[in-house]
Image (cartoon, rainbow, N blue to C red; front, side, top):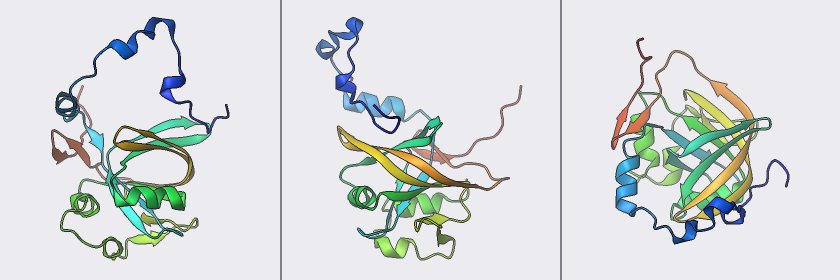
Length: 188
């Protein structure tokens, strides 16, 4: 298995967990309620290519490895952006700062603004890789999809990072307890 390949979870065997299929899953509502208390970064995944231009607000993004530079992100399979991201293969991940709640709302579909119009802002520019990115994002990564798998309601994409941009001096936008928030350094 190469570094870019993902082994399906059901292919991993462990003697202690042979009976795991017999254990009941947590109720979906209880699961959502529990995770609503976890603070997550707010990003917009954006792409442009043969399948068109699309973007979606995403809070399920994390680093996987720095060698090779790799992230993963999850997109609901019902999202119109899902198939566009998959087909285009190249994308940007834009971490929003605390003053960008409107961008998060826009790309989550609030207001039913047509997809092309969501990019009608001079701060969306095309990267050297041809993907739209926010010039005023806290962090913007250009990425190429390395693999994808379907788990329940979502697609899990693993992507190699091609380029990174960052801005200093801004607080990140996070989502916690079903509300936008930001962070401050903890005082010790």
